[in-house]
Image 1: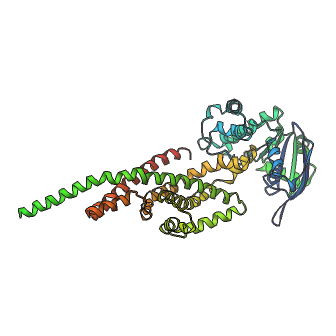
Image 2: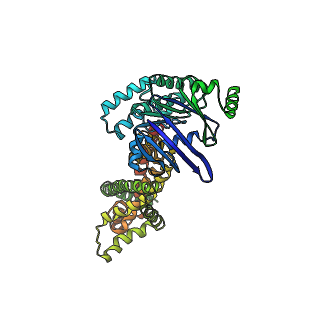
Image 3: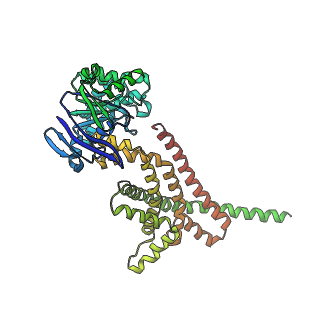
Length: 245
Length: 230
């Protein structure tokens, strides 16, 4: 469904991505692991054009694009097929929970308000926050905000949802509620690419794991194989350090 | 001795009569001219300010330089000079304006330049993540600007914008210089008849104070309402 080839990205002199290839198939749940600064988040942001890659190819539903020469029109069109969940939620602060979920439908997709509200309420119900639909983001806890953000991502029925460290900004006791929503999604067959530090999530929910190091993919395997018998020395080290924490 | 008191009483009786006679005569041009002049100019200034802030925020080529130039010139020249330039100067180029529209143009452009800076600062204070999240739900730049960023920015800019509205109420008195018959001009006319400058200018000052007090109260109430969302 979605393939990226040979993505390169630098910030000034700093090379962040040094040629990344990978494919997302329908129904895949891919965990992207790696140390801080390995380029995981940048990779995700390049795939959704929040960062402009210096070079690389993107194939989305059999259409091929040169990532360094994307046209605005194509970006707008492709973004409507995807959704993004941010580390710090980025809920629209001037909108209620329900409006946050429906704005992508009513404004970006010109859906009538009634249908959009129905979808919005269904999605809020799914993340267990229907009773908070008229609350503003500042009246919600971090975990609740992230669940609204997931409902917002779901509302537009994307083909794939990108998660950028969705639990990293949360207090430990709030992480569970967000992960459990994500687990439900995975079980329903949602296609997800998740940059995360949550090894439990990667081990129990993800089907594939990609391990990034220094702007490259060092190891890529099924989740089961990855945790049972990591191939690379560096991967084993990483898992050891993380597990000790 | 008794004569002195009688004289004083007669004098103050005259002052009281002038005060009450002129109150309405000052208030009516206040309601008919000062208030409309303020409201119309302020509304237009907000449109100018949002447009000026937007072209800078969105880095629109050429227009953003025009915006910077406009702000630079307007903020760097006196309001009174601007009024004279438009009302007395432009006829030299064959552009003849009535006093009221000339005043509207000058006050809108002047307030617009200050508001533009207030709104631009407020827009820049909206976190970048709001724009990114807007992109990710499929909205275009303009949709995000008008639905997400501007509403948040206007909330932040509300106190400085209230200030500029209150300043504008008082600045409209300068329009007297280009023959707009607003409150101050009306007061001057009464004074030229009865010559009681202390009383009459204190009276018009009091009426400006009443207008501004009402606005300040409204500002406080609205700010409290807006704070609920922050």
